[in-house]
Image (tube, rainbow, N blue to C red):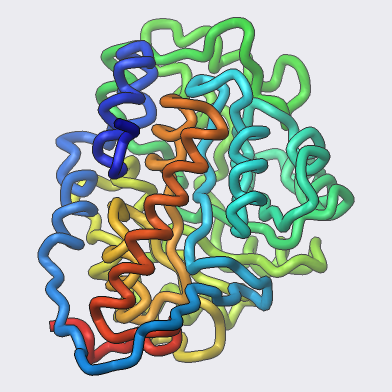
Length: 356
């Protein structure tokens, strides 16, 4: 029998990966408290369903930043996807397009943003870090615009890299045959070397700008006609400041528990962020989503949609594009069932009073 839930797919995926690769995709920072809490936070939310509602006809469709989606779920940016499967980001883009949703391509993709764009006609967003080299940053934005990406997702929670002890212990590096395809030859050499530490840590250290501030956000917004979303926000006041400085969307996230250990789970931070920004922009959330009922809980607490990262990678590792397609099908089916069982025939009917 094929895997019937995301937990089973993760087990199957890990069996196909090197231990160090599975650790890279699955690990968190320090004691991994936040990594675990991202999941348990959803398990601690209970629902109060409505009954005697006609749910014979249901629609899961919604929009995010005006883009129609088949369901309120996007694929989060995840780097180095060719570690999971040879087709990497190309397979992810195809699966997202087939499912009627949006893939957010990581800056650290193993296929270039142009290669991924050439694979599908559906909507794509591009995830960005602000680098010490402003020319590198603006160059990536210009390439994304030219290639037809529809939004820039600026990750704000990595002024420095969190201490990911699994990667340190494994001295994680990229194999020689993989590249960070959005960078010029030589710019990502540290990822292949390591020198007794995580190659990812060395790579980040050479690129990141800890000076990045609200002033730099204003600068970035002026460099593109694309909407800019902020990913990594966990406070309502930061979300409001982000919108004041030009952000067109907020993604509530703790980077999958890979940055500050002990940071609040995204689903717990979500209501504060939603209250702070009101209806000025769309608010999304990620971290710990493994069931369709988790999507419903997030929508009920004010999210426009959710993002999934690790489940997409596990699907890729298990069976490439078909594996990721299966992940999305499972989540969609479970979400549809959760809507029926809570008396919500449309996404708009998923309201705060469903939360116990």
